[in-house]
Every structure is written in C-alpha cells, then in structure tokens.
Length: 330
Image (cartoon, rainbow, N blue to C red; front, top):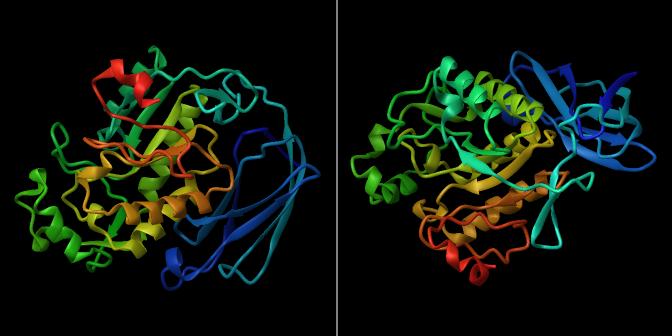
C-alpha cells in the first residue's frame, strides 16, 4: 500500500484512449473514500495515452479509490495510507482565519511575504534555476506567476514552448481580439496576427514543466499564486472563447489542485482585459466548482478594485500604492 503524507500529493497514472482529442472527448474521475472523508476528483489527460488522477488527503488514515470514466472500459481500484506529515515544510494549505488572518491547515500562522515573477517558467532553464536558488535564500514565502506566457516590457521574446499545440486556428474569439486592439499595449494587434494555436489541444510538456516548478516551490515551503488569465498577450490566449477558457480552467484545476501550496488568481489586472464582470463571475464559479479542496482564490486589479464581497473570493488581491488607506480598505 502506497503511503503519502497528509496534505501531500498522490498520483495515479493509467492508460486510456488516444483517438480523437483526449482533452475534450473523454472524462476521467475518481472517488477517494476513508472513514473521515470522501472526495470526488477529476483527472486529466497528460499525453501519450496516459491519464492521471491526483489527490491530496486532508486527513490521516486509509483511503480506497476507484478511477473510472469514458477514457477506458475498465475501472482501476486501490488503497493508499495517509500518514502524519514528516517534512518540516508541510503544514497543509493556507486558509483564512477570522476574515483578517491567514494560517495553515495545522493551525500554524502564515505571514505572507510575496514576490511576483510573471513569466519565469517561460525563461531559459538557467534563469529558472537561478530564480529557485534566489528564492531559497530569500525571505519570500509566496510567488505569483502566470500559467500563460506574457508579452510586455522585459518579456518580448518568444517562449521555448507554449500551453497549446500549433494547428488550425481554433478557439479564438474574433470579437474579443477586436476589443483588445483598443488596449494601449495591443495597438498593433490584428486578427490575422494571432499565431496559429489550437485552444482545444493542450501542450502536455509545458504543463509538466509547470508541475515540476510548483512541486519545487512546495518543497521549499513557498506558496504558488497561479495567475490563471491576464491581458498581456499577442498569441490569442487572452481572447479565447468562453468554451475554451472553461476547458482550460477545468484542466488547470484538475492538474494543479492537489498541490497544497497552490492559490488561484483569476487574473492579473483584470480591468485591462476585454471581459465583463459577469464573464469573470462565470469563470470564477467554474474554478470554484472544479476545486474539491477550496484553495484560496482572488482576482487582481490595475485601477479599480473588484467587488471583494463576492462569495467565491477568499481574500483581497489589491494593487495600490496608498498603503496608508489600509484600514479604510479593510
């Protein structure tokens, strides 16, 4: 029986169907059940005919799991034992305490000292390693970074890989592209300039690299505040159809949701995008519904604050320079 720490990550990899588009044509899900809890989790396709299910036990004890879905004609069953944390950095997930404080699942106080490295996972390998080395000797215990590449100041080179496979253009909303042309940093953008990506076909290699970086941060005791969407784009990723955005968000939660150090940031500077508040609400509810663990989730602003009274928001992610107003903001 495999042993995994409480708030650790268990992964089961099983073979399944490869025909068609496995990212959209098939489903995989699993039930993990112990005497203390039952969790239903959604799996994901990881390429080369391999499907994966990830699970984070929030209690100690023996869990029995059953993996099923249209991805395969057979079920997979097994047992794991969740044991008390043995590593010094494992205090569980960060959560809100009494509206104004943060603490880990085991009750240890969490005092956030964060930094932002938007596109560090898209830099050359040597620079990524240097980032980890710098973080290891720093005071930071949280880092915000993007899942999508960024095109803006200091990030104007093509990344070595992308989150989608190249192919016939699918999944870009032309009306959103037209709206984006009016955003200052998109003044030279045209519909015909959108690079040829298929927003229904994820690049598993890129997401595997993200897995590795999130896991490394977790081992270091550093929270990974994942920026799910942002406007600084020239490839069409910020102008996808709602269908493709929901497909991506569900994939991201299924893939990264079992890491205890993950937070969800719906957007960086949401008010510079072409989306309406209603659209943001719909996408945020998608993430909340897909996450069985209730990770921290918020949305980041440029000029105007989002309505942080919304029920899906766990904490405020507020960009301002007038810190003296913190009591008023609270």
